[in-house]
Length: 174
Image (cartoon, rainbow, N blue to C red; front, top):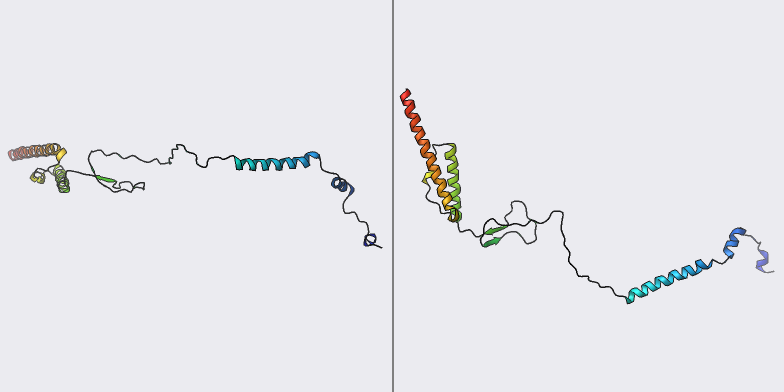
């Protein structure tokens, strides 16, 4: 006898499952898969022949949450130096550029000392060291400096007149 005849006939699946497996698939399923594959292959074939540009030219504006700040000088003049790097970050109070100034630094220091002495005079009228300053050449603001000096001298004269009058009144009372 053959080996097939010796094995018992065991059914591994039920009859319902056997009916489903033995029945050929519906035409829509078999042709639908074929149609889907044809559409995908046609799309790939068309993408090979139809070229799209790799570079698209156009205008764009790029901005940030914190927009850049445009800095404008209050005075005119030639740039002496640029101290901030181009496109770099700057901190508040950092020197960006220096404009050529006709006033020397020594004159600016003299003006600062004069103003300190003038403020000292206004708080303590016995301090009259501001009047010993020679004329400071400030080019564009020389007239304002002279006006300040005249006003301070006038205040000093008025104060000394008030002191003389008050001392004579005190002397007469005694």
